Image 1: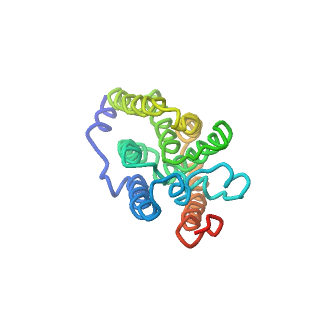
Image 2: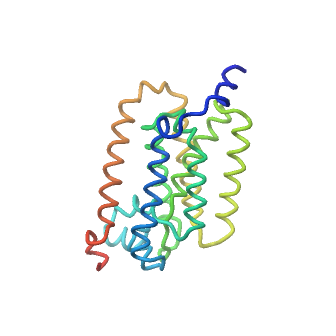
Image 3: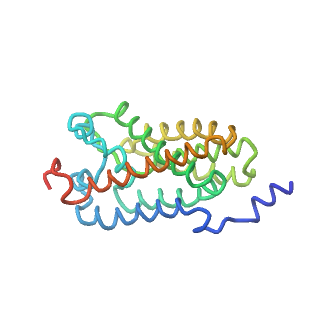
Amino acid sequence: MDDEKTIVVRRPRLWRQTPVTWILILVNVVWFVVVEGFRGLSIQGIVQSGALDWPDVVSGGQWWRLFTAMFVHFGLVHIGLNMVSLGSLYVVEWLLGSPMFLTTYLLSGLVGNLAILVFAAHDVTSAGASGAIFGIFGVALYMSFKGILTKAARNQLLIILVINLAYGFSSSDIGNSAHIGGLIAGVILAAWFVVKPQLRYAKAVRYLSYGLSILTVVALILALPGHSPALGI
């Protein structure tokens, strides 16, 4: 009981102990305001901002869209719901550590976007951080049912997850394959990160997080105005 109370009472200092969560939120918001604000929220503008577009990725070889699509959103409600959900999951970074959290986030987002390419229609344009966020949900739920989080925390997470799932299934335009793909990826990664001794894999995960971060930065640069000739900008 003492350990359980400690988790409830000792909240992490938001910025110092969970920096990746807030940096991701900041990057998403800045991308939405600056890049999407410049290009507009039409389908053409969304694609130019880095959304996932099947012909561009598969036929055009624009691999970077698998990363940039995680930072592109269709409107205020879309980004608002995603960022509130991400912010509510900061405790996962606190428990996992920043490298494992970032690795899980980006890998889950990649799996979610690949699921879109495989299962969605080829004329669909997809964007959003949902696949990555559902991956973090997967980790949180795994931790909850392993007793690492309290029942209250688990119930809160389940409520947020249900809201996101309900929002996803409320429209055929929402990429639920990304949600499900990200969630499954998160659970699988949690089974590795949480069950296995963390120190055994800490160095490898840290380097993996560095590599994924570099690829993400390169991808975002390629999606900036003036850096993407294939888009005719």
